[in-house]
Image (cartoon, rainbow, N blue to C red; front, side, top):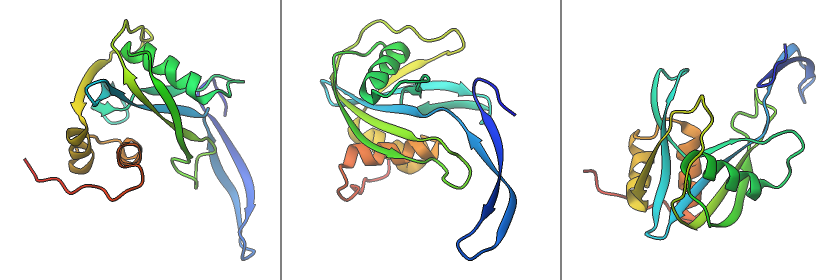
Length: 174
């Protein structure tokens, strides 16, 4: 099965110990980029939008898929940030490339940090109904640690991007 968003392939897989797993299904999606954007007041730029699979609104990092042939990860991040939120003018740093689920997905997720962003005019796609939400750095960490952000990948990305690999700060509960 293949369409513009997803492809499903069936592989004949043999594990390192020699066990055969056939068919082994792998989902192929385009690579995508998420942006941890911080404005000049050190607030995190998040987006709230309805997610059909989840069945409700989800607070997330802005981002989107890489188009075929795109290789400039920071440029994709800048485009997605501008389209979804209107924020521009950032210093962009590609922090990491990860797999959301290496057992089932063949694509990669790229995290870019954008600092010093300023508000501009958003131009979301017609299918996107996006609310921009600005939260202080500590509040973003608290949201990630307490379930205010339900997308597990975004929780991890926020913690990577906001802690620079140092110990995650312990925050008092509200």
